[in-house]
Image 1 (cartoon, helix red, strand yellow):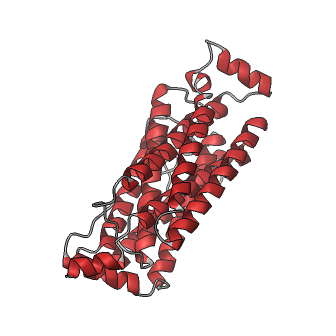
Image 2 (image 1 turned 135 degrees about the vertical axis):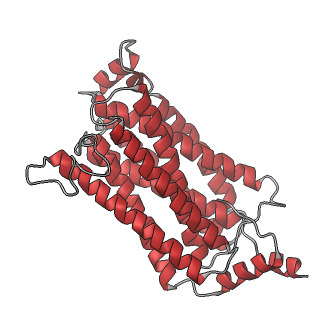
Image 3 (image 1 turned 30 degrees about the horizontal axis):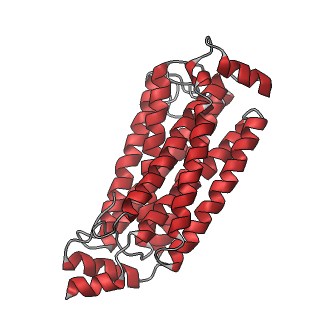
Length: 331
């Protein structure tokens, strides 16, 4: 997903995109595709939290054996079918973006690579969703397999958002990434990205535990976690806040370091990441205090996705090919 400029032709293409209009129709459309996918992801979390994943039975892509559910459909059916429709529109949007990008940018251009990976990851996303339904890893299912699939689902979701974010970034005229001669900067950014993914995975497991075994009070929640007979998702629930604290420290340190490196854009992104980390941490505390109501889980996930997108863009900004690189390569 992270590409390098390896030839004078690639540098020329990237420079042209950098100097070209970032306000093109494709750029606006790409931003819309990214935003729509974030909303679809949040709605998918509502499907899990409301235990509506079995709303279409074990049928996929049909819903209870029908293309469109009949009039006797339940609320769960409506929730699940709506998620499938919005996911389908997200896939169509990515396909349109890819075709548009292939028509607009020449062969070998970095935008083509980013949009291709966007399509690849959204197809994997759909297949994972189909497996969850076909294997009945939804609603009240309490198996280890469900937790594993949800973790893989979360990682792929982040990869999808990363590919979409880079697509938007480069379609908007930003320069390509170069990994060579970056010193320790690339490893620092990688650490920040890994920390963000780690807190997301532990959050997915904690959210599953909250869905299957809701606590009646804070004291009850602590009793659940301390009990040796509790479900593993409940006993592991403590892991999320611990990882969240460590991740927040790492990501904040990375973002703060970014404010002293790179361009003005990098500094602004770094400060925005720090502000988002602080806000997300406060949301997490409130989520625990309120015993993880569904609406708060969705807000928490929304800002987790936003933080990931910001981290990807910050990394792209700090690892860019600069005008001096163009001149040096051309020489």
